[in-house]
Image (cartoon, rainbow, N blue to C red):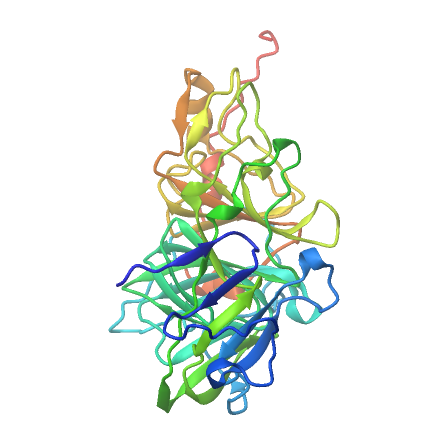
Length: 439
């Protein structure tokens, strides 16, 4: 596959046109009476028109046919998506899942859409406030069909297999240890190259942004220039058998037919785009004296709530780094949290639970449910010689953290058959070291 090109910068005003049609972008205005090459002008708005300038998101697309040219949408019964959080009774226990199984292609062909499964979430898309966490498992590419999310943004974290994602803005290749964000309303198609698996954080009513740095200063964490945006690419392709456009709308899927490819955008400009980011480019901040800094120092992207300083959802990673803290228990400490913490593992061995927490699996520690290192980790770290050491070498774990109390779906608790019912046992060997005579 030819190497893809990208433009860099988070939230920038980008300008791009397919080199096969130079001059496709109108000069000096967005919506001329007649566009170059006989194209149609179409605006995609990601925010209210009246939002403050720094939060206003929109892009202008110049396309062969406008996206309105389709047959009526009809309900599509496919996949395991839901925002019904009352399907099973609440469960406050610490939950851990074994790696989610990818069906073998000859027996059960699943593409990105049919392989979507909702694991947990809270809120609902009609009120534009909430999140959902999905698992995707697929073994075949989407053929003559695309998806767009009317409900919110998808943050996609591939864990196994690379994704070639075609969007109205161009193409992106997203591999494990990279992430991408497909924002609300953007049509995309996913091509895979074998058995593929990953995680999705969906947010309703907010867009992802870079966290404020405060005392850290002007540089650090995820730097804006490392985010990549695709360049314009189009296909002028008639589809006699019908091209299926799938909309995720109010938590359900609907399909409409049209007779041409939706990826017919010759040129575009604006600041509302899909983008990707390589997690190895994250500039890690850490304690260099004693104790832990809060895990918020590992935030890559945040979706803010209406409460100052409180996230609807944060995307946090735990990358390879140096541990040098003096007189400090270095793994994550035991804690209870007013946030919900969903963790996934892309590769390697997570430092606090090296055995049961596996790549392609997950865990959920709900609001105020205690959690922390397993017994083996505690004993090992309590006796370790405190010298500078590399932490999480060859590992990439991440966390979707939310201020919402997450409900787990029936698929997550029962149908998937991946719930580890022995998770609680990893803490049972913890023993008392209390000695009132020894300070």
